[in-house]
Structure formats: C-alpha cells, structure tokens
Length: 424
Image (tube, rainbow, N blue to C red):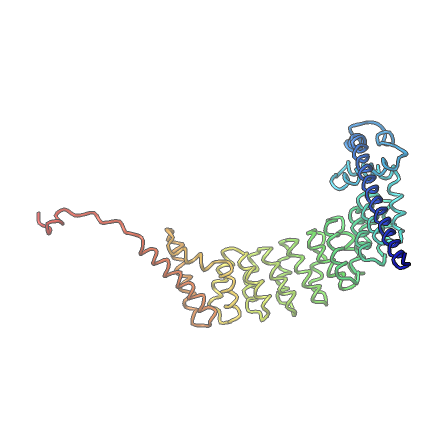
C-alpha cells in the first residue's frame, strides 16, 4: 500500500479513536455529575431539617450537637450551602445563629484563606461569601482586600464590609469614597447608603480628611440616608469655597427635610454660582415653607435656566399660594420669568384646569378661571411664549363655550292662549 495512503488511514483511525474516547469521557462525566447531583439531593433532604431546627432555635441542644457533623466533604459543603441560602433572607437573632454556625464549622477560617488565591475571581467569590457569613473575624482580611489590584475584588470586599457593619468595617468604606475610579466610588456610596444611619457618625468624623470628590460623595450619602445628625455639617457646607460642595449640601438639606433649614436655603438662593442656587430652589420646594415664595419669585428672574426651572417647580409644590405667584409672574416685565411661568403652568396642566373651570357650577371657580384667562390674554402681547399660552387658553374658552351652546336648553312652559294668538 502507498505510504501516503497508509498514513492517511492511520490518521483517520487515530481521529476516530480520539472522538470515541472523547464521547466516552463526556458520557461518563455526565453520568457522574448526575449521580453526584442525585446524592446531593438525597443527603440534603436528610440534612436540611436539622439545620432549620437549629436556625429556628426549636431545639435546646448545644450548637455542636444541633448541627450535622460529618467527616464527609459532601455533607460539609451541603451544610454551608444551606446556611448561605438562609443568610440571604434571615434577620435578627436567626442571622446571628447563622454566623455562629459558620464560625463553628470552620467555614469562616477556610474562606478567609481563599482571599489569598492567585485567581481574582476566587478572591471576589470568597469576599462575597464572607459578607453573607457576617463574621467580625473577617473584617481585617476584608479591609486588606480593599487594596486589591482588581476593582471587582475591591467592590466585593466593600459590599461584604457593608453587610458586616460596625464602625471597624464602615471606616474603610468611607475612605474608599476617595477611589480614583468614579464607578467604584459610586458603588461604594450605594453600599454606605444601604448601611444607613450606622454610617453617619463615621462619615461626619472623616469628612474633613477626605479629598474634594470624596466629600461631595459623602454629602450625597448623608443626604440620602436622611439623618438629622448631618444637618449641622450641611449648613456649614453652604459656605464652602467649592460650589460643588455648596450645591450638594443644599440638595442634601432638601432630602433630609428639616423645616428649620429653610432660612439657610433662602440665603443660598443668592449664591454667586448657579448650581447651589438651583439646588437650593429645588430643596425649598421639598420643604414647602411659605416664607420661600417671595425669594423663589425673585429666582424666576435668574439668567440660568435650571435655577428658573427649579424655582418654578418649587412654587408649584407650595400649593395655592405658590400657584398664585406663578400666575402673577405672567405679568412680569422680565421675559425669563414669563417664559418659565408659562412652562410651569403648562407642565402642571394648570391652564387646562382653569379652562375646565369655566363651565364649573361653582361661581368662585368660574370667577377665578375668568381672571386667569384675562391675565394670560393681557400678557399675550408681550412675547411669543405667553402669546402661545393665550392662544391655548382662548381655544379652551371657545371649546368650553361651544359645549355650553350645544347643550339643549329646557323648553319654556307654554302660556295660556299662546296657541290662538293670545285671545282668551
């Protein structure tokens, strides 16, 4: 036989043997995996009742005797899986029992060792598991992991520290706000917000030591936590040299919602930079202090669109008095104020409501609607924006009148003698 042909036959046979072995290996692997899964399900049905009995404190047996103890690696892994699943949902005393179980089984110690893995995804997974275990012994290793070269590992470690909580674990999270990666800083801020009021004291203590970008993030976190303990710092920051700090402080005061901060926010409406003015106007709308109506009316004349918009929106939020101020701005000699007043009245569907009130049975509502239409119409000569509002109002008036005219009037009662020319 030709040597080349013989070589080709041998190659084909070799490939065939390789494919047969590969198929056999795949079948064996699948069979073993299915057998393993079946054993897991069987063993889990035996283990789960004991674990749930321990977590529910239904038994007075010591922890060592309550939890299943086996030399089998399979049983140990299944117990950890059940506890991790429970750790995601349980609270209070039951959560403490889960943590105690992890510590007793040695799971915390082994997972801490996994933090030193050469593979970053294994370090990230170990950090996430330690967060669910919530053991205080994991705090220092997780703090060390906050310097990991991989951003995802740092974020998992930060999230784990947020779950463990306590001043020791929160302090490194506050420092992590200075992370040069903006996305990492945002995610750390979200973690601190989820921590809640426990993070407030650490943020207040560390604030002065943080760089500018971290202080902006800290103010945002404090505002979203909405703790009254942060009001003092926020008021102080309204006078900061950096406009971003002043703007974030004004926004935070609105989120916290302390009515006593209204005078400070009213003063902030006169800030030299527009972002603090815009945030102060927005926050005054949240506080709904009637004393802010006058200053907000003045801010409707601001040359910065966002300041005017937030001021108009705040006036709408201040109820009838604020709405009346917006309507009065239709007659203002400032075109910026008129434009924004029309925009806010349209956005709040106020024009439509007044037109609808033209047909109201309430005499007071009808009179108010007529006054409103007169004011819009009188202001229409000033510029195109108010002219458009006037056209909208006038069209509504015509539509309302046409509806009235289409409504059939009741026929008058016939008088005696009408049918015969009035003769008796």
